[in-house]
Amino acid sequence: MRQSLIFAFEVIAGKQKNAEKENDFIYHERIPKFEDLEIPEGQLLAKPVSFDAQDRSILGDDLFAQLLPVSVIKAISVYEEQKTNLRRKVEERIDRKNEELEDYFRRLNLDEINVDSEPDKLALPEDLLTANATFSAQPEAFAEIVNKLHELGNRSREAEAKLNELKVRLDAIDLPEIISDKGYEVISRTLQKRIELFTENRDKDTNLQNTIADESEHIRILSMPISEFKKTIVEDP
Image (cartoon, rainbow, N blue to C red; front, side, top):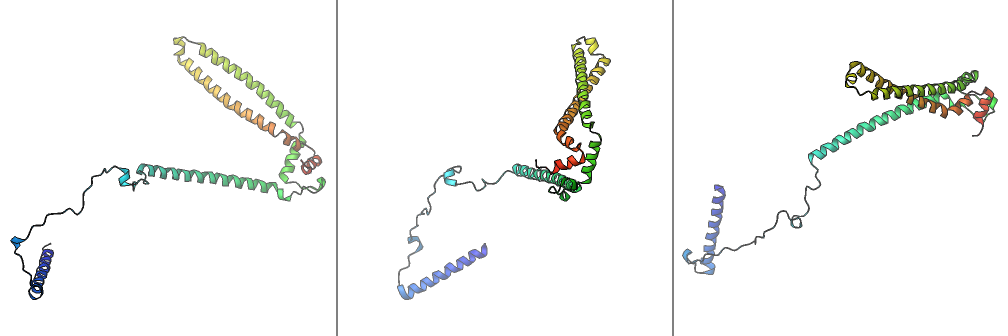
């Protein structure tokens, strides 16, 4: 700071000496004394203007308007990570199922089946021939399965009626000394577990019946003699 002031003083003093020499030899103007000089009044070079720091028309758009809070950025990062993990798991499951399906098709040897050939000369996969032999050797097996399912359905309805009756009889008991008894509590819990187990098995039986009903036509075709079976395969649908 001091060096800057000394340098400025030297520059001003040098300029003053040069001006005095030029005046003495060229202009010959009178040099006024310091006390005769008028003190210049200060002038404002810029007029201050008041403004509202929150006024959008003055400030314009917020430079940071596009920035998101840290919590939002973190939440987006977590979401993207979870989405990536879920997509990877789904893709892995799809790949596994595709491999299983391709392996199943390979074992069927479908590419070796020429449906344009004569039925007697049609070469079928070994697994398909084995299934046909099994079903055709027991032509009554499917009917027996259907009868067993009907019997199972009848027994299921009987069991459901008995369980519901027991449930109603237990719920009808309102004596505090009986309800608070440990034996009553054990019976209630056991009955509830039986009802839940029965409901689960009933749903499985229903799904099984629906599946067999959907595949009944295929089972009927598999039960045909080998000559009719091949003829049915090569026939147009």
